Image 1 (tube, rainbow, N blue to C red):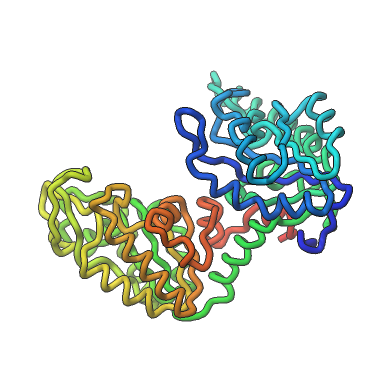
Image 2: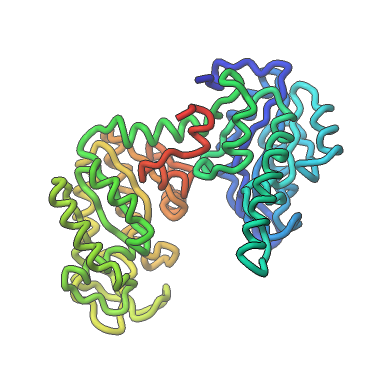
Length: 419
């Protein structure tokens, strides 16, 4: 498989799929440029070699084509500043004008294409409302048919293809998977960020130092079921945190008050506990909770046993006993995966548990453990608490990371590797 380090981009045009789907405020100012910074090593390597850049990304989920509020034009100046060269902007990713702009690119120059999702062909799904299933099916076929031409046009811009957008690697979209078929094995590769992501996941899932502890947060067991089931065949300890706590607690006969709880998943929770026991996995559950009388940062609060939450109250974070319990398990671990906070960390009064978990991970990492943090909320925790530099690897992927942990083959990775 070709690698970016060994490839010489001199005199070549490189189509680089990045993830510049960054958050912007009401004035269209970037509020977090982490994803842009993550792509810089790849972009700078290509320019330093004497190559020219065709940068492609999506932004948001536009429902119409095009939608100005999802234009990538908002990132041009910032990308130019970080890259150290003026990035040109094509106000479309298709058309004769764009083709001419690509053709005119000289070595050392960069061109950012407009949002790929302004075309339904990027995702391969029709948009809009349909009068009947037959009409919708016909629209699907039409988009799939035109997707081939769309993909071929994108590929025609370049001599080589670089995928550096791990955040979209779980989608078989035109620019993340299908385009790779237009390049031979010597002219398609991962970018530096994508390489790091793939290596970090493989270290966690295949090259595991033990004990291996996974911390799974999130509101619903149903959204994490496949991940939990896959992890029960790999980890030594599985810490259940966040809203899932109360489904497990109630399944075991506890009282959870008004806490978030999936009543239809109680049997599933018991099945997972049984499976953990059979696999010799220690399932670590909260023993106490910080509860509130309403879902608010300013609510009245108190600490109680996790299975004794009174009516009218809800658990919004773990308590001090659980912080110690989780922390002891984490600090004794050699491999750590964290996905999902312990509570409503967005409220300042309910940050303690997530902070304690993050700090325990940093302590373990200092002692030689390999730690991987992924998923939007967990990454937000790490950034909020200033722990980013204490983690072995912080993933840029949300859904892509979760699907990789589930054991799925990601289309964006398969397109380059062939498996």
